[in-house]
Image (cartoon, rainbow, N blue to C red):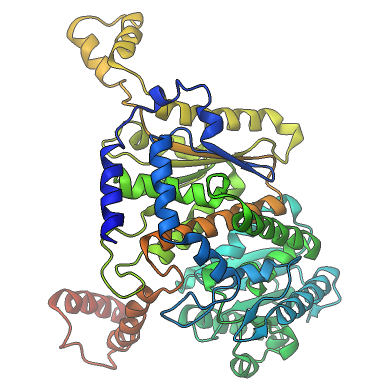
Length: 538
């Protein structure tokens, strides 16, 4: 670790470069990009040079990223705090061979579950599966976290491929979420999918019980219109869900990595099993690339090293995910959970404090909307925010091709503007042309200066298809993995979500006056008293 720390420090000394100056090398764009299976990742608009990149690659080798990658994909228990394998890649292992965990090949069960999902999805889509009032017109997926964000993001992203029932998503325990979602739906023609591995997640089960009560007003046996994505068959049976509509997945699939399997059932119903398979094949293709490509030409590796360059060398504490695609409106939230729940840790794998810093804050919105919101801070604010642009060369609306051309133009222009900026001399010339002079010329010019030298990367692809979405999601999964390995973090547990859950159970009893609150701090007692007072008045 000490050697690694010295390496970071050396890199920090060499991080202050001009991107514009680096671009004077005619070969830079080609040298600082990776192309794989129709994707182009360009990281040339950063301050990283060849020497810095070589040093980063040395760190990756010294941290044994390749060995750790192979251990993960072969079923070894790299989630050491929970003694579990990490095998979301097995869910998309359509062309590969056996993968063993504890001496048993997991692939027969993976393929059997996928076949059951396909059969059920086809039955729902064709009307062979019917509710009390006929074929399902709507599907409501109830989950939270990884069992919600993945299928919701994917279903929105692949809207051009929808030819099944309408899909809706509920996650928040706030009653407004379930109420607004069920409003207008026909309870006799709605399929409810409850996604909870243990079938005990309080937010999910509370919403599921509310949906069952809503359906029971119109349906004699509401459980007949429920399916479950869970391993707790005793609890799903008690809820009234038949075993043939329960789809389980193993402990070696983490929630935020789970949309490739049963958690993706709503997406499969929306776009059909064949297109869902294309989504899996896109993820599998990225797995093959990640496992076989040399480090310098390995897209997840260079995506990760660029991220570490910005967060741990340049000291930028945040990154913006900026897809220029309205249908990827939930992608930033999905990657936010993927990265911040995975690498937002304060201790390393061996339990010692993280000295290098954990993962950065991840956020973002689709372009061009963001340009009229937070891009002001990105361009002229005092904090540098690395931007991760992505855009398709082609849209799905040929009659609106001029819209897409404008979209792409904006995406590419933003990265150029961040790099180039605008000097005071250029700003003065503009203001002189506008008729300003004297002190007012200086004042107006100062407001139009852009410091530039602000880094960005761009991911290009032909069109957002199921296959391409699979590639992109797997790319970011592996990027998070690489960063976690280099930082010495276990990216596959999430103990940070536990404490709040434990305290919430006690707080619920306090709010209902079933438990005392004398041991609470003065602030909490004040807040509880306010809620109790206002609740009692309604």
